[in-house]
Amino acid sequence: MAEATPLYETYLRAPLRFERGEGVWLIAENGERYLDFAAGVAVNALGHAHPHLVEALKAQAEKVWHLSNLYEVPGQETLGERLTKATFADKVFFTNSGAEALECAIKTARRYHFSKGHPEKFHIITFEGAFHGRTLATIAAGGQAKYLEGFGPKAPGFDQVPFGDIEAVKAAITDNTAAILIEPVQGEGGIRAASNEFLRALRQICDDKGLLLILDEVQSGVGRTGKFFAHEWAGITPDIMAVAKGIGGGFPLGACLATADAASGMKAGTHGSTYGGNPLAMAVGNAVLDVILADGFLEHVRDVALVLRQGLAALHDRFPDVIEEIRGEGLMLGIKAKVPNAELLQAMRAEHILGVPAGDNVIRLLPPLITTAEEAREGLSRVEHAAERVRSAHAKQAAQA
Image (cartoon, rainbow, N blue to C red; front, side, top):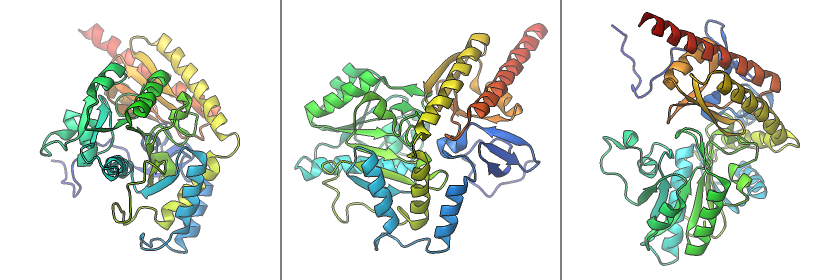
């Protein structure tokens, strides 16, 4: 009988225990090395034990860890100024996670209309396949039954439409609509990218109807697609944006960015966070931007992404019985499997390469943004061997049938 665990049993964990990481590699307790193309689900943007991040955290840890937002935190001013300078935003609220950033974004949109004398405008249009977090508001926004079940009535004010259907968006708008919320590239939903045309159409609808456009760039942001943020490919800007994951490089950090107008309803006392924007997180966040915003870094991401994308396309051609489709942008890629994705993922682990399962029978490849072309080719070789494992296993089953 398995030994009882003191932990909540909410995770289906792989039987792997890692004790340290080096760049794009994770080293297990038994000394085996794994190529980490999961990156903590797109969190470890600069890989493991990046010296600049380690030094920033250690230096801050020797000064002050926590202050609360009762006082000014200089690191917040610095990181806030850098984020607003590099984006559409005028204002930033710091959080500890993506779900908290989305909560702030939702509250910011609703409070905007309330402050303009329209408290009835609190509905937000969202999309099928979305994932925005695990709080009661964000599971309601995501709308997926498997995350809503058993947690009481769904939080009101979220109207879901099919992903990519502009006519459905128009039909869903009422006098109660406050905003439209979308991931430029759905992560959990199976690496499904919204077209540039669709994003531009949403921006136009919001402009025409007096709605706010909220982007969830928790997974697609901070260089993941080869631009600082994915929406830049479409040539648009949102009114509000939720950011997390890569911005902390592995340290818990999120942010809600907004224009001055969109944030105008968020007066003193309307929102807060005990840990949000703590000195440790700010030190690491600033260190991450030192690297991501350096000359040539995003170009490097695009170059390595091209190597990986072309290699995956070749594997798709070679293994049509295992791989149905290659999706995604930059280093946010998805392998839609012909076989159950858990089967291919298990074969990849056997080849010591890590990926992340997603909806629509997809495996996400989310390598650190520091991955070299050589490391990308090593990853492709391991995925190839995994596909061969799956093909051989199916051939053996067919022969025995």
